[in-house]
Length: 212
Image (cartoon, rainbow, N blue to C red; front, side, top):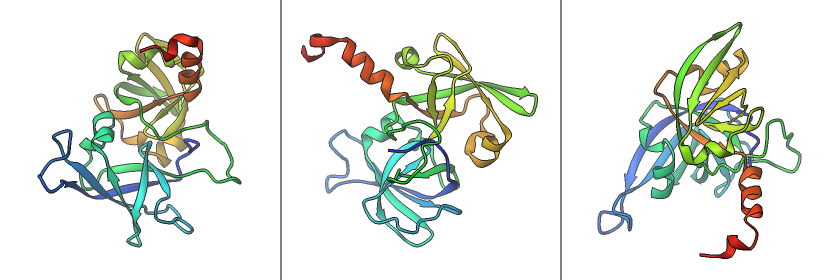
C-alpha cells in the first residue's frame, strides 16, 4: 500500500522487452524489464521483493544496481498502464511502500492502476494550475466531487466532475515535485480510483455478486 505522496522523481534508464523460449508470452506479446534511476529517493532499507510505486504502478524490486532498481512488468500491467509509452529518459513519480510508522498524508493507494486517462486541458489559476482530465467511461462512476483519485501515483482531490471528465487544481509544490509539471493536452496518465468506492459497489451487489 501507498499514500500517493510522491517522494522523488526518477528516470527510466532502460526498458527492455523480455520473451520466453518461444519468443512470446502466452498473450502473444512480451513482458518488459525496467531499470529506474531513483535520484533523490532514499533506498536505504529497500530489499529485493519490496514494492515501489512508479507513476502509480506497484512494481516489485528484482535487482538493486546501486543507483536505482530493476523491476519486471507483466503484459497485464502493460495493457492497463502507460508503461508501454515509457522510453529512456521518461520521468516517473516514485514512492516507497507504507511502513507501520508512515504518515498517511494522502489516501490509501494500492498501486493497482485501473486504466489510462488523458489530459484534456491545462491553464493557470492564480499561482496554481487547473487541469481537466478525461477518464475511461467505465471509471467515471467512481470519480466524485471532492473525492480522492490517484494520477500517476499522486493522491489528488477532485474539484469538479462532468461526465467522464474531471478537474484538478494543482498547487506549485506538486507541480515542482512530481511529473505533473510536464503535463500537456494529450498526455496519457495512470488512474487509480478510490478503492473504497470499488468495495462499496461490490457490497451493494449483495448475493448477486457471487452469481456468474
